[in-house]
Length: 437
Image (cartoon, rainbow, N blue to C red):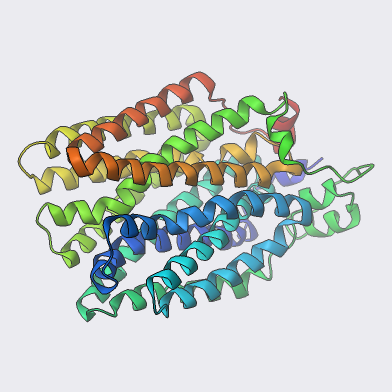
C-alpha cells in the first residue's frame, strides 16, 4: 500500500521530520537530567528530607506514567499532529511555572505536569518518524531519537556546570533555559503534515494521498471500509500479547536501571569527593562520550538488526555495573567509576536505549502503534520510579556498591528476556510486519 514511501531514499523532509520529532527526546533528556544537578541546590534551598528529594527527582517520571498511555491513545484516536503541537505547548508552560515556583509543593506539582507533556511526546514522536521513514532506513532514523536524549542530557549537565556557581537561585535558570529549544520546536512542528498511514487508516484517502505526495509521488492507496478501532485492550489480544509482554519487561528493566545512573550519578560522584560543579561537568563528559554508542547503533541497526544489538547492550550494562558494584564496596576510586559509567552509558545507548523506541513502532499496526509506544513509555517510567526508590532503599543501609550489583542483576534479566522473546524486524515495511503477527 505504501511501497513508494517504503522504497524511497532518505530525503530532506525525512530528516526534518526526524529532527523535529527527536527534539522531544532531547527535551526529555534535558529535563530529566537537569533535576539531578538542580537537586544539589534544591536540597538546601527547600530544606528537603531524603523522601522529599527522591519524590522530586522522580516527579517528572511519575507524570510520564500518565502522559505516555493517554498521549498514545489519543494520538491513535485523533491523529498524530494535534497532540504533536499541544504537548510541546504544555511543555513550555509547565517549564516556566517550574522555574518560578515559590514552594516545594509548587515545584513538585509543575514537574509532575511537565512529565505528563513529555510522556505524551514519547508516544507521538517515534510514531511520526516511523510512519514516514523508508523501510530500510527506519532503524537509523529512529536511532536519532535516542541520540537526541543523550545530547539533551549532556546539555543539561553543561548548563548545571554553568549555572551552579550563580548560587541559590541557579536552579531556576537551569529549568528556564529549556524553554528556548521548546519554543523553536513548537513553531517548526506546525509545518509537519499528518502521517498518510494514519489518514488511510481512518478512510481519509484523498488526504492521505496529499500527505504522501509531499514525500514521494505515484503512490496508490487503497481505501478502508471503515475507521480502524483504537483500543488499549488490543495490546493484550492473542495477536499482540507476546509483543506487549516483551516490550513491557525489557523497557521496564531498561529504565529501572538507566534512570538510576542518570539521576543519581552526579550525587554518587559528589560522595566520591567531587564538588557539585565538577560532578555536573563530569556527568556532561560521560553523556557526551556515550553518544558514541548511539552513533555505532546508527550505522549497524539496519544491518545487524534489533535483537542482537539489544542483547549486546544489556550484556555490556550488566558487566560494567557489576564491576562498579565491587569497586564501590572498597576504597573510593573516582577514575574507575567514571570510566565504568562511560562504558555503561555507551552500552545502553548502543542497545536497548535505542531499540525501546523502534520495537513498538514495528510490532504493531497503525491503529494502535502510538498506543503501544505510549503504553511502553508508561510501563518504563513505572520501572524508572521503582528503580530509583529501590536503589535508594538498598544504597542507604548497604551502600552504592550493593545497589550497583542489584542493577547488574536487573540487566542480566533484560538480556535473558531479549534472547527468549525478542524478534527481528529490520528492513520490512510496517504493513508486512503487522501481517506477520
